[in-house]
Length: 240
Picture (cartoon, rainbow, N blue to C red):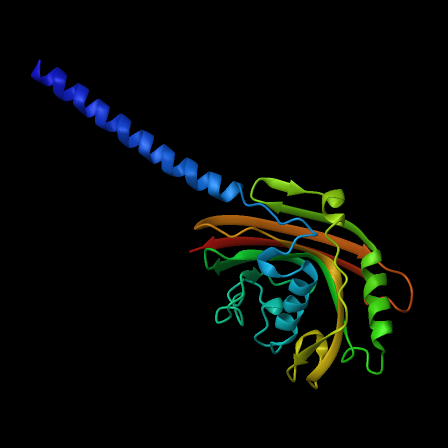
């Protein structure tokens, strides 16, 4: 009897441990797969989507090319210029087109800003252009988008889902350093207009997340920022 009781007791303990482990795994998976996005007409973390888009480009333009996360192939620099800010969102860097896979560490409790498709045009890149011309060029660029896709863990958003997230900003000012991104050699204050499809998520819980976004466009005409553009970016996010 003693052996049977001991065996029964051990089986009960093991069952409790298995249930506890499954519960932990289940809660972690739920936390990751339940990451939602804010509606386009909302004000995530107190700012409109347009204001978040402007902040994204102020950050992206404000870092020299050699340190800029846009040019980072691995994600090692993705927090550059973000770690000391009080922003409620962590901005995922774009690339210069093509395929990228990056791993980023993010502070838990922050949301993600995901630039599924985007353009910004500055008067440093187009000297002498008026803000109206910058705005028209940005609009034409994003009018030419022909594919949009976003996947957050196991949840997918297609072209029709993402169309309503288009954001066209008013002109705003950025400070560009010398030897900046996009071939800008001589920096300084610059007027910018941005357009594109930006997504903002709810705050991250501790855990890991997989984000993939891809998009493309074909633009015709002299005023196009680029004739063709394709990007496909995968992020492994570690929230801690």
